[in-house]
Length: 114
Length: 114
Image (cartoon, rainbow over all chains, first blue to last red; front, side, top):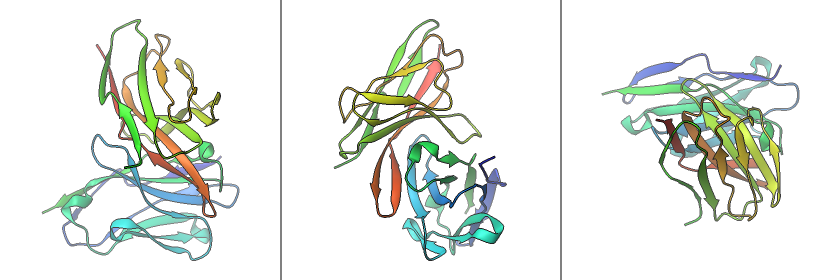
């Protein structure tokens, strides 16, 4: 079965500390991977996406993610978090050109400790 | 500014009432989507439309209906048959380029039952 797992429901990190949010997927074909961020009561904003090529993907707001096929993972990282990074983060996987088949993870809520 | 607008931001439904959520986009995208978001869960696809005057059911279409009479607009009606409509509803549209298909989301509508 195709699925996306975000094992951490809630993470708290101190401002200025590094961050890694985990995402594991199960997908039968070549995956097309996304990370989205959602502020409270808002829609989703695309942070970055992987479709092929370099396995380290750079995104907006200083985020990056690394695709590891052997581990079926696509973890999101940021070297130094800011208070404004507090939000919910969603990982998603799907085929190259069929957004209706994208599967979303259940999200990780990030809190920032002053 | 190009983007996706959803209205209203909050919507209250009485028992037995149908309500309609608005979604408009000026991105000139052909495809549009409706998702439902519940706490602690990922997004679940309700309906999608890849072209004007055509739409398909998603994973949880029961109790919902849509229309796509104009490229810019994709309204969602929550009917009285939907017994648990309280949720956050997100509309999206998508574009396709050499990096595949990418979705862009509106700010959402929160539906509450009185």
